[in-house]
Every structure is written in structure tokens, then in C-alpha cells.
Amino acid sequence: MRKILFLLLGLAATYSFADDVESSQQTAIQPVVTTNEYSAFQQFDRQYSLGYGLRGGDLSAAGNSGHFNAQFMNFEVERLFDMGLWMDINAYMNVAYNQNPNVDQAVQMFGNLTGSDPLFGGLNARVGYGFTLDTDHLLIIPYGVLGRNTNYSSYTLQGTTTSNLVSNYYWTYGAGARLEYRLDKVFDFYLDQNILYNSSQANMTQGMNQADFYSYRTTLGAKFNVWRKLQLGAQTFYDKYNYTSPLISANPSDSATTNQALVPTGSVGGMVSVGLTY
Image 1 (cartoon, one colour):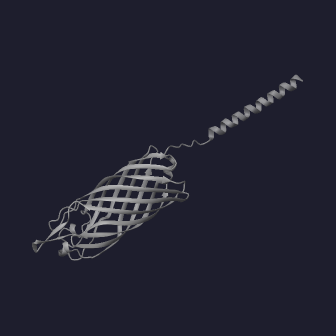
Image 2: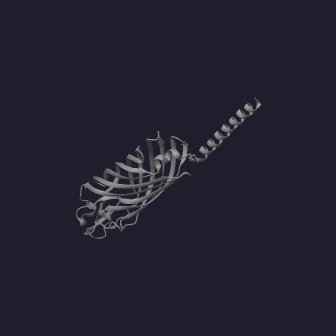
Image 3: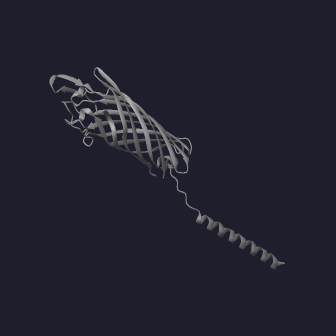
């Protein structure tokens, strides 16, 4: 009887030891899933995308006004790092532009106006740091901006009838902040505001001041992770422009006669995009 009892106890101990070993082996081969306080937002903020957008706005000068419309393409690469560092790089360019009137009284010597758009194309980088207000839903990112943007305008022509876009550019720098709300793993929304100073590097014509200006952009956007790594995006934005001085030109045939060049004062627009997360 004792032998039978010892045999049963031995078998029970053997099965128990085998279960412990198997459990330990399963635990050892389980992949380690690392998370951080930004993991939920990285589902949206690690992406690259191609976008198509429209802009339209008002032109103004003393005693004169107008309107412009533009279409543009945009390429964006965005990354939110594990430690909270955020980077966003945008390259864009107009693919169509028109305005009414198409003649600017301030630059009649060149005939038809070639354009008046300080955002014809460019490359801009934003770098910031994210602060989680709610690790699953709310993130705020203050950031700095540095960029180079092309000015497409008749008043920066250098005595010819064609625009030299290589030398007609601004150095752009400033700051902003983005408030991001993540609803779930599919829907993400953000409100972005920045203030920028644009320093003109172009040679001006007819004695005009440099076309430096401040710009303010408010953006409301959304991202949608629709399938696997496919991400769709949409945004609408409002731009306000404040030039540091009026662009007043002297008439080449009569220096006593002056005119003021048309410049944009504000615009609204929107963009849709398609991209991939990584």
C-alpha cells in the first residue's frame, strides 16, 4: 500500500514539474511588446503621404484689389519618436495659378503680371516635443519652423519679362503648436497654429522695399487609418499675411508717379492626402 502511495505521489510531482517547465518555455518565447506614453499617437504620426490641395485668397493695394487661386501638390514625412521628439517635413509646389486682374499697375513696364504668390513652392521643417495630456487621447506639441519658400511675383523680376524662381525666395522661421486628439486606432484629429516671419532674399524692382511679411496659419485636420498601413488625410486652413511695408514702385518714365503692388492679404484652402504609416 505504501509503495502504491509513493508511486502516485511521484507521478504527481513529475507532471507538476513538466507543467512548470512547459509554462516557463512558453513565457520565454513570448515576444516582448514595448510601449511608451506616445505609442497610441505613433499609430498616426509615423507616416509619409502625398497630397493635393487648393488655395484661394484676396490681393490688395492702395486703390486696387484682386483675387487669386492656386492648386498645389504636397509631400510630407512625419515621425513621432519614442522619447517624444516630433519632426515633420513638407515639400510643396504650385501646379496651377491664376489671378484677377492679371495686370498690376505697379509693374506695368513688364506687361502682364506673372503672379503674386509668396508660397509658390518650398521646403519646410518643423521640430517639436510632445506632451501627453492623456496617453490614449490627447497630445500637445510645441514646435519651431525653418524653411525656404519661393516667391512668384512680378515685383521681384530683375529687369526681364521672365521670373527667376531660383533667386526669388524667402527664409522662413517661426514657431507654433499642435493639439492632437486621438479618438481610437482609426480616427485622429488635430488643430495647428503657427506664426512665421518670411525674410525676402530677392532683388526688388523699381525701388520697392523688400517684400518681408508675417504669416499666420490655422489648420484643422484629420487622419484616418483605414486599412493596415494605409492612411488617408484631410485638412482645411486659413492664412493671414501682414507685409512689413507697402510695396511702392516708382514709374520708370516719371519718378514722381508711384504705384503700390498687389500682395495677398489672406487665403483659405484645403488638402486631401493618401499615405502609409511605418
